[in-house]
Length: 129
Image 1 (spheres, rainbow, N blue to C red):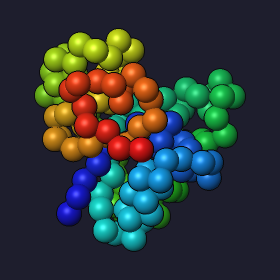
Image 2: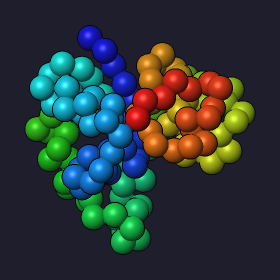
Image 3: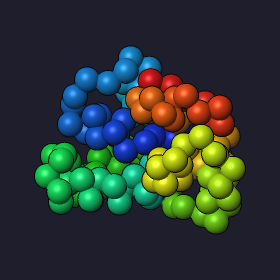
């Protein structure tokens, strides 16, 4: 089964039913049908909390929790030391949170669902959008 990691904005756009890239939409649809797996780094959950509290997104942690409960193939992925080590090797993504999310994808050896141009340009991370 194919597996992917999502970044924060890709997941938020899905939860808020906003426009996303065709591949991202297709992958989230496939995960909800049980045809693929999307890992949600724990840092993505933390960013959703922060952005919601700042009023920058409409998605709350409760909504995220409900979505994860209804979509067993979209799973929380706890951060490990090995993932942080993988992120340490990524020297072309400066923002720490993005680097750690990218490091999760690199560690797992799977593409990252993102529309972030800095991450897309990284030579370390395979991305889809």
